[in-house]
Image 1 (cartoon, rainbow, N blue to C red):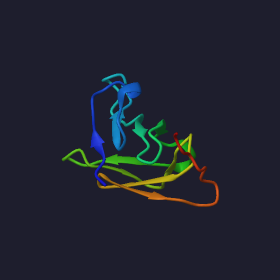
Image 2: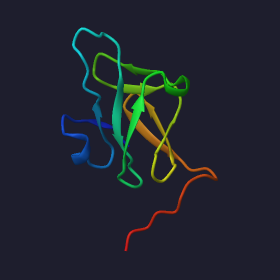
Image 3: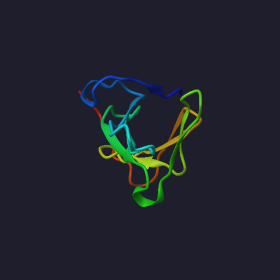
Length: 99
């Protein structure tokens, strides 16, 4: 599925949407992204350099992660390559159901 880069506040992001973490304009690097999990809808902050993760952006705003990020709520692994999201479930994933 396609990851949509939005300008909404993190609390208003929809599933599969993400927003770049605001930063000082004099800093040229990437701080991170707020990513709304496509599986559970929880927003997770993914920081550049945390745990060896590197975030890259291409000219057409396609974002990539060097390794998967883990959703804080449901623990699914979120892979992001060239703006395409894929999910991976392992033994740590929580079964989250809404009634």
